[in-house]
Length: 454
Image 1 (cartoon, rainbow, N blue to C red):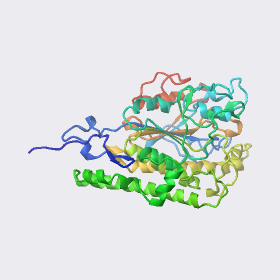
Image 2: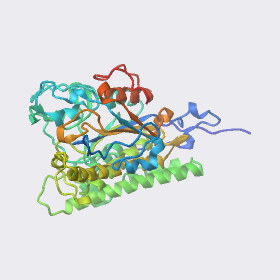
Image 3: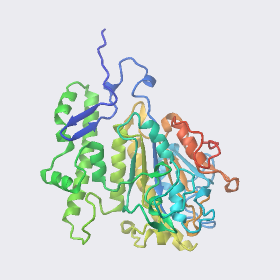
Image 4: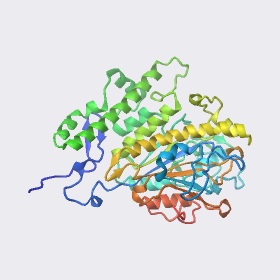
């Protein structure tokens, strides 16, 4: 028998007029008779960081976040209950601190420091000017290595408004630059986040980044898939039945997300709301918005466009209400619950709503094949906040969840609880996550070493 199977490169693209579309992992990318650990089908480590502004519903007496029990014998809390279907790939981490988010003599600015220090363990320089200084964040340490093999080193997203003011102060004498992102490429280079799914889609798949270009495409109903049709037809002729089906399903996902982006653009363009500068392509509902951003990242993971992302559910101090779940109070105001049990219970509903969106993303990853496993098997995600009890701006015992299999390096189904009094820095968790993802780093901010037990 003569084997003539030739492997497609993992970095295979469909190209057309102003469009480039990366493909998901296919059987045709695996050389015949080659052990899977030596091929493109071997799991690629991916990292993601999802940030919750304004803390969670907990204080010393009432706690809707922390699970009951430790180790493998634990019970999910009300807020964490949407993670129950993924128990074997979820690790809840309690008791870690982020001391560099505290004042340290700088006075007010708790919300600014909560986000700015979350992924680097560095106390940001207090300034209203251009002389900002923070620390390189864990996502960008990973992006510097993973980005050598992907089209985009990383993607930075936010599911709320964007404050484009980079100078001046937003809180307590701190530059707005610290609050507008949690991702820093270097101590002096904050990375801008994007909230418009249409812009993210074009960044991933082709040209047309301005409002006028996007609206013109709406009128002509052009699809990025239409522009790569020639390459697609030639490719399909070379693939086996299984790969043809996989490509078809992937392209249908691209088309569906493109349809949702276009629908949001059309609705916003037709809106009579007196908000002339409102960006197009952003769904009005929070859950629709964040799911669309998660779906775009899901596509980016599938096609290996990037292996690193951050998603902020919002900026600290944001005042967004959540009428989708019957809550019309502003987010930040609700977080200052006054230690009132009824207020904490109401705030827990916002946290639960947020967690449901994260569970949606986990489900999509778990149901997407990737090499000899799934995308969730080969991904490690950190979900959490820069405050525990937001009523008193507490930077200790942070609410944190690690999800995914980390390409075989992470064991789930556990609640790891550390003593707050031992003052274990959250950056030890970041060091361990990078290490398990194959990124060597000796220190991040105030880290003292890998997190024992992870």
